[in-house]
Image (cartoon, rainbow, N blue to C red; front, side, top):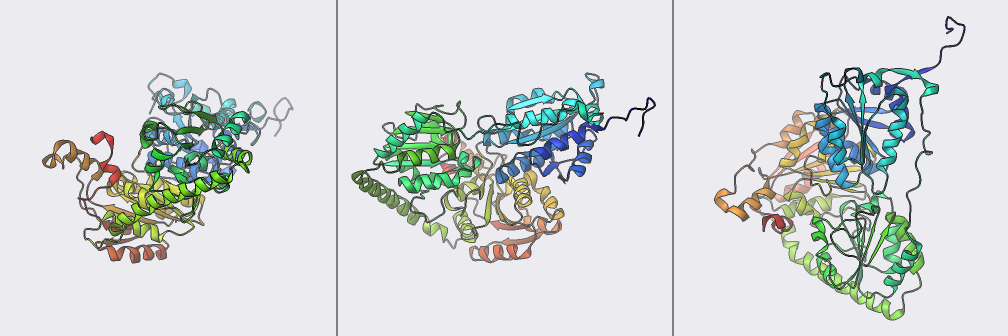
Amino acid sequence: MEATNGAAEPEVISGGHLVAKALKAEGVDVIFTLCGGHIIDIYDGCVDEGIEVVDVRHEQVAAHAADGYARITGKPGCAVVTAGPGTTDAVTGVANALRAESPMLLIGGQGALSQHKMGSLQDLPHVDMMNPITKFAATVPHTERVADLVSMAFRECFAGAPGPSFLEIPRDILDAKVPVSRARIPEGGRYRASTRSIGDPADIERLADLIAHSEKPCVLLGSQVWTTRGSDDAVDFVRTLDIPAFMNGSGRGTLPPGDPHHLQLARRYAFRNADLIIIVGSPFDFRMGYGKRLSPSATVVQIDLDYRTVGKNRDIDLGIVGDAGAVLAAVTQAASGRISAPSSNNRKAWLDELRGVEDATYQKRLPRQHSDASPIDPYRLVHEINEFLTEDSIYIGDGGDIVTFSGQVVQPKSPGHWMDPGPLGTLGVGIPFVMAAKYARPDKEVVALFGDGAFSLTGWDFETLVRYNLPFVGIVGNNSSMNQIRYGQIAKYGADRGRVGNTLGDVRYDEFAKMLGGYGEEVRHPEDIGPALLRARESGLPSLINVWVDPEVYAPGTMNQTMYK
């Protein structure tokens, strides 16, 4: 088209289309969203860029799904929500991603800049609210800067330990069009540096030497092993240097069940008796007793992506800031061939000692896992789930007491096949994590265990799973209670105060699933659990198996929580 002065009109692009181009450059192929008038130009851009728009029923689900997508794929997740209550509804998902070190971008709408401070629809100080729970939060001030700021937000997601970023885009900024020549559109792969650091090479040598001279070492492989996709390096480290390994968080599944170096139930014993304890990608938070569970006489080494985490809450002997996989690979290379024959013999005796503790603990609990009691012992339920999992099953835990049981029994068979909320302990992640996992990896089976209270928080998005044809095997451990809290109330205030504010209705979640177009079954007897799980798998539908479990039985982890002491 020719302008009146004879010059060609410049090619123009809207803010929403710039968002989509920036997402595409980062490798994002889906956004999770709940629609709103402030953000629809982003949808229009996503259609042009081939980015799927998955619409959910609550913004918390969108944010959790973006978190889950990042965990599964290694790419940042993205949720897009409208202004005001749309953004505040997503706060919980963003906060969970922060504590779980999950890289995701939340984009929130905002009233037009031309109406700033005038009381526009759904106007709130989003950036002020998001600052404490993100690594980066900003308002986009001009349409020319949209793609630039999206790339900046993604860069901040990966600074140190990963985490969430937030961008607020006013409606007139998003809808306006600017000449393409004036908009900075960063090119994918050219605006972020590599984060695979091994720290100080001298510290790598020092750790190699500590391992060579250790007789009773152990390693805890935390979530950052999976975050950095360092699972193969971790396995090589453990096997080459003959070190017993424990796993937590997303690090579960790094070693398969049955591996001679894979340990689960002897962790407390190991931490009390080891002479060298290596903590990889896991903070000294409440799950570690703030570091107090480690032997005071042991040499303690901590490896983490975040400088601020190393040595926090407990003194250490050596701290290495770097990529978990890269550091472990470097240490393996440095330490190979240094372990002497006497040390090797002592190492074998140490592994045998830990295996003895592991086996004794397992045998003590085994009768509970095979219990024929009705109502069903939760140990029997999680045992049946563990037996049901295959090499391709991604396991998701969403709940309090029932998921605490599963943490002792369920063992994923492969790296990246365990998902739980993380240290924020957020209930309601299950359905959105299923959504993310099944969307990102349709070739994988997804198995999710819910507490009945946890499922209730985001369960309506079961319909979204039906609508998008995302089948999974879901199990509700139903005791009609928020049982983890109920235990604490009984412990602190007595049985007569044990039913205050924690008792739920006897809900038939199997009927709920069927109502929404999924598969449902009710189970009251333990021998029926396995067959019901198989039928759910064979249905090819989103499913819920409603298993009635004993409300008077509590997980050891629940009973040992310090807040109830």
